[in-house]
Length: 464
Image (tube, rainbow, N blue to C red; front, top):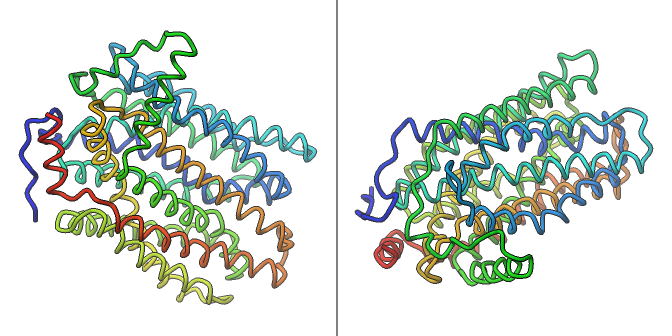
């Protein structure tokens, strides 16, 4: 195992176990919401709220138009925020309650809406949720980059955060179907589950705000002291300049592009898996928790193995290995027929092992690219980096959701009945083949990624 490179850089001392655990709690709440919406939101709209797939997909896309502005803008703002509660923690303090309310509203589509009214309702509630989510998740992620600058300590912090994310993801994908089935009807079940999830997410963020403290601002952020009360023209000029500086960071661009392709592929799987289980495997909605629990349970166990791999390999190589395993499993799903439950379970084990790399490695790589950008530009712009990374991540999620919705619409999907061969073919494509292709396209980008353990040590020496 490679030893951590000694450094007197700020934030290079080891983090306490309590700090890592407290930080991980926030991911439990955030990933609960993300998982529930990734796996179940589209099928809730089409099969419970009875909104046409094309209408639901188009309404979700509206929120992402705003997202093209809000992620980089909020990133720029957080870089320049100064308060007695810190640059990022302040957003967790004031965002916890609004996040819970907005998350609950997404699952409360009134019955009997026309197509246009449903479009407006979904577009408004989802855009509101997405905005509050950005205001909370972006500062939460940015805190991690400033909590430690040690190459391997970041992997350790990410492992704890990933474990919290996995617990939340399992709750979101497994617990919500169970809660829905326990309710008198599906619509009531989704509304109650959404309210419970919103409450738990808000509470989790409040725990992070209470227990985790940020390092004090120092010389690394000296140029980030820009006054956010400047004129709009001056502000936008500053935003554009910060954006240009960030986009000149080649390692960050390579990582962000690769991670975006991976996110696109995995969200295709998450969005289509419920349709695959119910219609391709000819199971029922009660089978979903079992399949999702198997997949995410394997991911959770694999995190410990991936931590060991990352400690011994370079981060990009470990990521590539995971993507190859995951893509191989996804391709195998294309040949699964009705009733092949044992085969699916075996395939999910392979996919889960490979998917585990995505849960830990890229999030340990982003802070390294931020250090490279600091060396390159002479300033540390944590918020803008996470703003761009979050923007591309959300665009990938939305594109995947719209792709699944479009495939269902084009192939003649009809909810709650046996599907035509064309519809089944479309479901198989968006569950296996297209996601595997996305993962394969990410591999060359990761091969070109240049930051190694030794190069990162040199970066820290230059940015002390």
